[in-house]
Image (cartoon, rainbow, N blue to C red; front, side, top):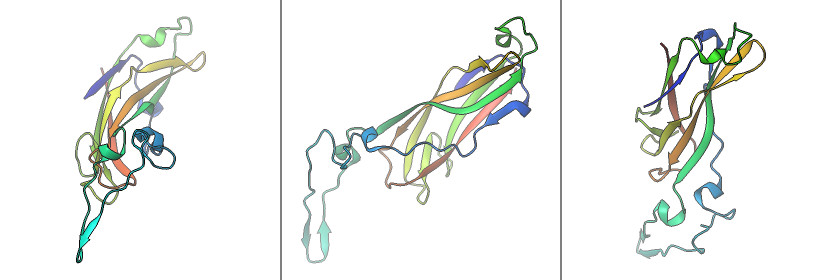
Length: 178
């Protein structure tokens, strides 16, 4: 579980946690494929298929044989922000002092598997998902307002995915004042 620290006084009225955060669709280039769908590292290939009577026999292909990578990274995904008034106008760094809060993150698939997203129709088809916390960034919006941002890097491993399509999960964000 990841933990970050920041130092403003905390008020839930000024906290925005994104619900239903959608990531961009995975592009072919992110998994090592060209626009035509052919692997960039392999020449076009055909799987041999044989049949005897009504039985069809095809060799099993693994994702690693088709894609040059099964890992996808999304950097600087904004999950939440917190905006507050800064009462000390004389000190630009006044927001770096005061009470602190801790932030913890956790990913759960729809079926409750930790560090995973699950397919919308088949919970056994999962994408392993890992969060790497980024330091909380606080910026002055204007003379009186400060905004703190909670970003993460998201690493996805599609090697256990059985189906294409949309995958869902929940990112729990727990903010505790100290």
